[in-house]
Image: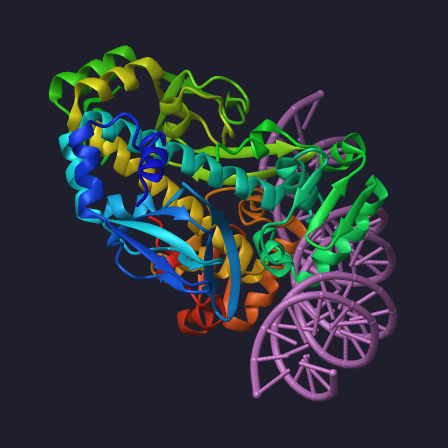
Amino acid sequence: MRPEEADEIRTLPLFRDCADAHFTTLLERGFLQRFPPGLVLIHEDDPADFLHVVVEGMVEMVTSHAGRETTLGFVRPFGTFILAAVLTDQVYLQAARTLEKSRILMVPAAAVRDTMRADPAFMTAVTRELATAYRDTVMELKSQKLRNGAERLANWLLRHERDGAVLIPVEKRTLAARLGMTPENLSRAFATLGACNIEVQGPKVLLHDRGALEKLAKPSPLIDDVST
Amino acid sequence: MRPEEADEIRTLPLFRDCADAHFTTLLERGFLQRFPPGLVLIHEDDPADFLHVVVEGMVEMVTSHAGRETTLGFVRPFGTFILAAVLTDQVYLQAARTLEKSRILMVPAAAVRDTMRADPAFMTAVTRELATAYRDTVMELKSQKLRNGAERLANWLLRHERDGAVLIPVEKRTLAARLGMTPENLSRAFATLGACNIEVQGPKVLLHDRGALEKLAKPSPLIDDVST
DNA sequence: CCAATCGCTTGATCTGAATCAACGTAACCG
DNA sequence: CGGTTACGTTGATTCAGATCAAGCGATTGG
């Protein structure tokens, strides 16, 4: 791992408060691995043996049941998965698949649990991280139960807007799954938002009128202020 | 509070490992209050001042947005809410409303945080509790994104079955909101499940053929094995 | 005891989303 | 370079669920 990447990880809320020695141990007991795109890193129902830290690339959290599949979220540098499964020593509830060539730091679950026991500051950080993950999931659930497809898309766009535009970092089919709709309906949702003066140019979306989009999206800090 | 209730709380995963003195302090700093049915205990967007423990009765966790409202869950003795908001010292993302006459132990957020700092065993328990809450919410999200209304109802029935029957503890309209549908569609979902030999008698539902119901419900430990 | 209300159910209709199918385009590969 | 494949879009249709409306039965309150 490059030193600046170790530094990046060190500054994460999850790691920044723990003692130097403990942080070093976590890195030493971990493995940094490269993966090609489309590779399944963890499977649903497998025991949680590692805490994964995305150092480079992007990972998709997916879940399948009875022939259906959906995307629960994306993890980008320097996000982690899945702390909750590691802590409770249970199986994963979600699978993880690389969306691009990625480099992943894999920290053995036992190392995480050992460090937690040894370092109160780390334990505190773990607690805060879990609380945040819980709140983010509650927001996602609210979004799913209280909004329709076009509204979810509009809010996603608002959240990812930079300088009046959004560059969709994944295939649109993947974004569709993330937003809980089919690719066809994502296309139509984009068309619907044309009325709010958005313009789709391949993976790039121009938001010509943020106000109009917000009027339709009705963003709320209680649903959209994810910490990630 | 009756001694046997304090004992019940003491045996909860969240409290059973902390030192006697700390547990006593938590109880002493808390208030035990009675509330009539339909009373709003906490509001969305309010600062999280208390950790609530349901000692008697039942509470509904609800959330509203843009004129829509939905139920995220029920809390029965001796469940708690909302640990995550208390820990991160943030606002509530959900409101809580009594469904029946209830008695609630309200522990000041500061007391929870103090005890956490002082008692590693309690901190560990908090972490585990949060991890569990997170996993339950992920399961709920999966249920919502991967299943249709009838399937969600079928699984809810299977989960609450006792001796071949389910006694619905709330109004059906409330159950409908909990399952993410309208009261009208809940009625129709019950009708649909008639094909699996269920029989609805007011608040009581008889499951004459668990096998048939499971065939439709397709229950999975990765969605339905909630710890609560 | 009767009237009013409320919760639930059922039917009719409408809307949003999924599905099925076709097509254009861009990327990939032999 | 040409053919193939994959992705995205669009249209037509179907389906699930929401909405609107009406009616029934039980409970409540005057």
